[in-house]
Image 1: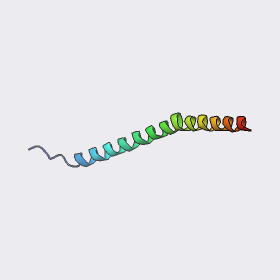
Image 2 (image 1 turned 60 degrees about the horizontal axis):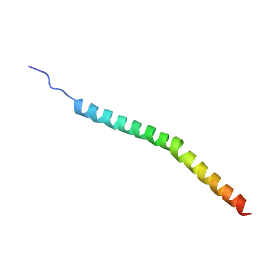
Image 3 (image 1 turned 135 degrees about the vertical axis):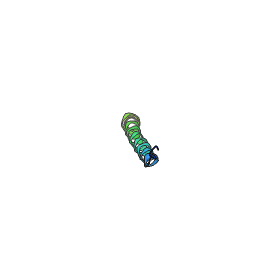
Image 4 (image 1 turned 90 degrees about the vertical axis):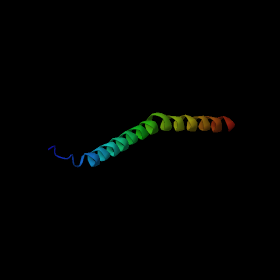
Amino acid sequence: MIAPITGKFRRQIIKDISIALGLGAIGGAAWWNLYHIPNVQRRDAFYAKLEANKQ
């Protein structure tokens, strides 16, 4: 008789959740550092230049 497979579903769920959280954290950090921060710096530079020209 073949032995039943025990714990496989739980291990798969833990692996799936771990991978999803890891990829989400990596993706969020990449978006923050590669898109958001440079965009905010460009915006701040624009408004600083606008303010300097106004005076």
